[in-house]
Picture 1 (tube, rainbow, N blue to C red):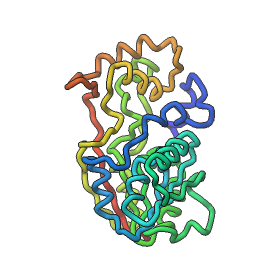
Picture 2 (picture 1 turned 90 degrees about the vertical axis):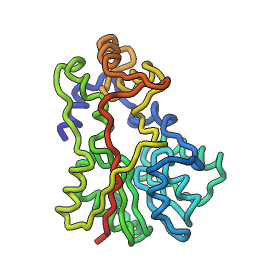
Picture 3 (picture 1 turned 180 degrees about the vertical axis):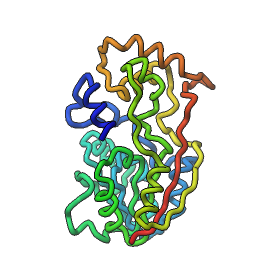
Length: 264
C-alpha cells in the first residue's frame, strides 16, 4: 500500500487506465527462442497433455512457447495492450491452443477451480495487496502445483538509487521472492526454490542505449515525458550505467528465482 500511495502522490501523468500501453511491445518474445533458462525450466515441468493457467500472461512470453509443448494454455491478462501483443504473436506463429481471457485475478468465477494442472505467475505478485485471496484462487485453479518466477526484489525498484536525487525521498520497496516464499511457508505450503541464470532472459535490465535506460527510468519514477526533472534524471541514470559489449546495464542486478509449491 505504501508503494502505491507513493506512486499516486508522485505520478506526473495518467497511464490512461492501462499502465502497460506504452511498454507492451517491449514484452514481445519469439515463442521458438532457444537459450532462455527461465523458459527451459518451465518446459521441463510440462507434459504433453497438460493445461496450464498463466495469470498475468502479458504479451505471452511464456504462454506462447508453453502452448507449443502442451494441450492448452489459459492466458489471463487484464491489460488490453498486452493482450493485443499476445494475440498478434499468436497469429504470426499459428498457435491456436491458447484461451486468452480479459480478466483480473483473483476471479470469483467458480468455474476457475481445477481448470489446469499447473498455475503460473511470472513477475506479477510484487504489488498485489490482497495477496492471500490472490493465492487462494491461484491454488484452487491447479490440480498439481503452482509455479512463480520472481526476482529477489521488484523490477519496479530497478532505479531505486536515483529516487532521492529526483524525488527527495527513498523509494518505498515492494516485497520480492524471499518475502513471497516466507508467505507461502506461513500458509503451510511445501515450497521449492532455485535461482536460475540470466542467459536468454531479456529482463529489461540491459539497455540498447542510454536513452533506452532513460525511458525505463522515467516510467519507473512516474515522470512525464516533458518533466522538469528530466535533466536531473539523465545525470543520475548516466552515473549508474555500465557499458559492456554495446549494451548498458545497472550495477545492482536482481536475481531471478523459480518457486514451486504444492496446491492444497
